View 1 (cartoon, one colour):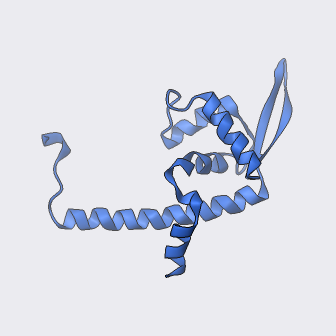
View 2 (cartoon, rainbow, N blue to C red):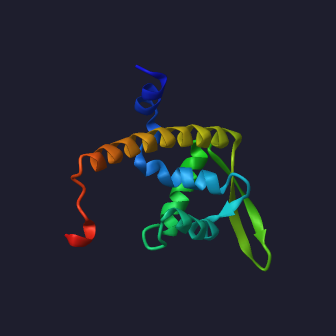
Length: 129
């Protein structure tokens, strides 16, 4: 088994439900973030506020903290209440790098599949269906 193939099969972080975690790690890579601000930024990756409620986000962040991917602390909110702020850990940075490598490998495989499909000429025009 090649190293590439083993990496995909043996690494549990390649599952699709981990996509949110990868997005959060990237958003936190160079700056800290907090719940509502992260929800807004996640729209760039295709998450809508309707499908991603704040409780789901905080549950994910808490799990990421348990896995040592992120760290959190309380920050004074100016005139408002304190808010929990998150930042990526060194381990989280290494894990982000690993997950992006896996996603690149999967993307290449998907592109080959789609290319072969197009070569066969069986692609249907969606507008005509």
